[in-house]
Image 1 (cartoon, helix red, strand yellow):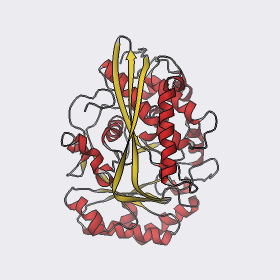
Image 2 (cartoon, helix red, strand yellow; image 1 turned 90 degrees about the vertical axis):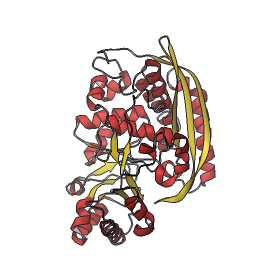
Image 3 (cartoon, helix red, strand yellow; image 1 turned 180 degrees about the vertical axis):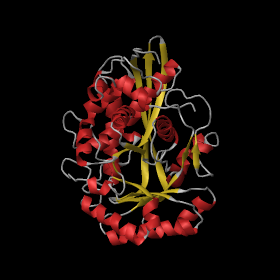
Image 4 (cartoon, one colour; image 1 turned 135 degrees about the horizontal axis):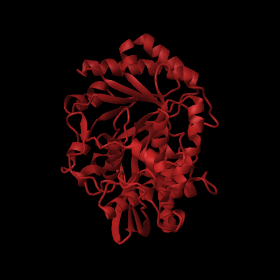
Amino acid sequence: MATGEIIGAKIESIEVNFEEQPFLKPLRLSTGLIDRITEARVSVKVRVGANEAVGHGSIYLSDLWAWPDPKLNHDQRDAELRNLCRQIAADLNELCGNRADHPLELGLRLHDNLCHHGDCTHPPVLARAMCASPFDAAIHDATGRALGRSAFDLYGAGQRLPLADAILNGRAGEMIQRTLRPPVREFPAWLIVGKDDSIEKDVGPWVKQRGYRCFKLKILGKDNLADVTRTVEVYRGLVGLGVVKPRLSVDSNEANPDAESVLEYLHRLKEADAGAFSALEYLEQPTGRDITRYRNDWREVTKLKPVLLDEGLTSLDLLDEAVNQGWSGLALKTCKGQSFILVASAWAKERGLILSLQDLTNPGLSAIHAALFAAHVPTINGVELNSPQFTPAANAPWLPRLAGLLDPHDGMHRLGDGPIIGLGSEL
């Protein structure tokens, strides 16, 4: 884009609706089982100069991940999250500042107003960011469509982006542009391996019929002997299925008590099976999400393997604290908002931190959004997309047109070679 280009998107109308999606098989987190989930779908019309366009965004309202409150059941949390989305739709102009602006600034203002002003405990910040994310995506999609450009082609040196500049040393446009790359079009497909999954029955078909070579293990984080045993079992089972050099990550969903327990897990794993240890590429946030409360020094752990901050990144103000604690980098999710994670990515890249792009079982439109983000922002894992495994029916409207992305059979997700406009709602 032109140096110093001014882009002003004015929000004109907003719609939100919901669709419940059943899981083909339950997904077990350390906090419980997910067997059904609500997809929030958002449309936003914007005007950019003389041009109008409608953009779209969606996300799963994953209450058990974003709001694991045992005092409330799924239906209660889900109802409150739907209501929050409706309230965001009603107040979106006010939450975004009631003026035309760059979509990044609109998204950051939305995140700040919704997540860091007033009582942000019920629902908590992470759940609020999740509910805001499809609105942020729709604004970016609409702006790009109004301009006939990719939403990633809106950045350059000399731009005035005050909220982003406050985080990125007054050079947000330049730093974001430097973070982005010409889009790649294919990524390795990752499969979740749950605690009770059979390697032969549950994992085997994805290896033999679909060519999967990358696997995220859900471990429970409370018993290192059991977690090491399971990691070795999975690794050896994959090798037995014919996977050459399996790629592994592990995720205890914050269930580990401290960094010392993670260090012990890694030492035990290395001793138990050097191949499994070598195959393990990184760990997603092993300990409690409030990193100001659950402080750990990760430096000894990261001498062995990278440890990435996920649920704990709820404010850009926490980035310095994460570095001080020794986190290796960020496990990004688009459910925190396009604006939020784009600024976080630029900040991290300037400091040499590692990025991965994890999933919220994104289907359809939100899977496209995640894939486009990974296409433009280099990550160590490409992108994790779990909807083919857990909610394939939610992808049906996009098939067979986007089968390469949403129904992979060769171990890779592929975007195709068509033009990218907005955030891909017209791919």
